[in-house]
Image 1: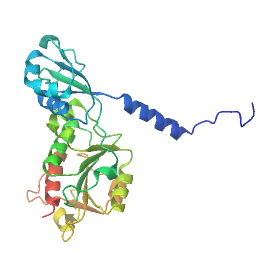
Image 2: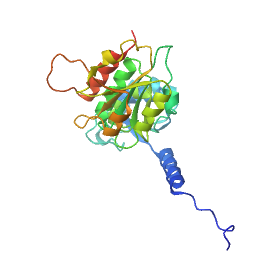
Image 3: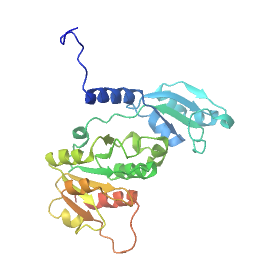
Image 4: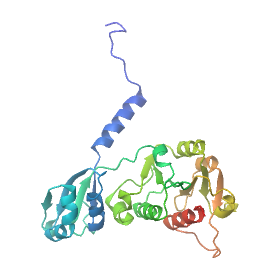
Length: 266
């Protein structure tokens, strides 16, 4: 067979991209707990696959179940069949779903309600409880989105959803391939990108003096290692939280809430 007759071999990056797309299309997760399950049932964006509930939980979720139009599987509370961690506090309710699709970074970086946008970027924050708490704070304080990375960051899980207390269904949470590329894209869109660092030379308030009308992205690193060197080199400035206590450091979810509040436009 001559060269023209041979099938063209796809480049490795094309094959990997197709495989990742197929894996994402088949990925599912189990949400558990009355609050998380109710919010997912009431979310029209969420693709719902299987609902397992006890009779007692169904009585509490009946309105949401009817609204979602999903047929529940009634389970014995002593032999709860959903494939979740036995230690999970499921309250008799578990829902299998597909991850939410919030679109692109550009889609989520748009301002809300005419106010300058605020974003939170997470550099290797892997604890689902921390990310869940950050999502909850982001929703309360009006952040446009929370951005993590595809690897070395917390994916959507039942534990994350339970900690987020419903925010996972309403607060955009993207996981992108490369955080530095995301920072560069935001900068090209006019964002001021600030990296949180305990030894930053200026406070958040000082960095935003006269610039609170700008779109702002705050980048937080994992507790301990902090921001990666490439992240530190890519942000516009390193800033710190002005803390009069002068002792110890904040949990990353607490730091995210305080930093976001400190950055809000007046």
